[in-house]
Length: 208
Image (cartoon, rainbow, N blue to C red; front, side):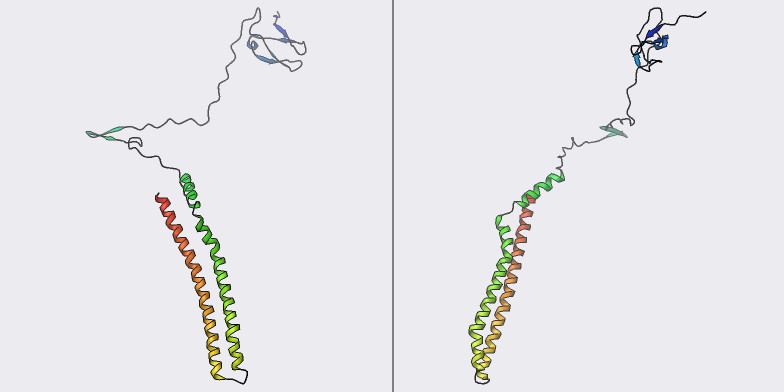
């Protein structure tokens, strides 16, 4: 003998859907239109089925390890060994290296303006000095050495006048070369003193 199976109507296609006790309270698919519908928790004349399983929350794949505990005392023989922590020893918190470097760079950049001016004008100063020395040597040679040579060679070679002209020419050449060397040494001395002053200032800033 056939038994009557409770049925519900699909809200999408109005088709009849047979319902069993295990389907109560669940979302099912209509066999006619494949639409989704929520079945009631109870139908008159039908006992409710088992409750739907509750979804379990996802667990982390990597378990969180427990925090290690530091024992204050560990018995050794008749006495005990006390383990001191950073708070007990009053350790000062170390400053980050990046902060120290930034502070030092800021101090080094704030150098006196005279340092930058000396470094900027050292080379032009020496170049102008060498150019002035060259012009002075040419003027001495043109107005003093050349007339002596001209006078010594006008009426034949006059040894008495030629020797002073040669000596004066050598003196002008020696003056020119020595002055150029002095200008170069002066430039090197300025840059060396500037580097020493910067090094001493950096040492003082680090100590401060």
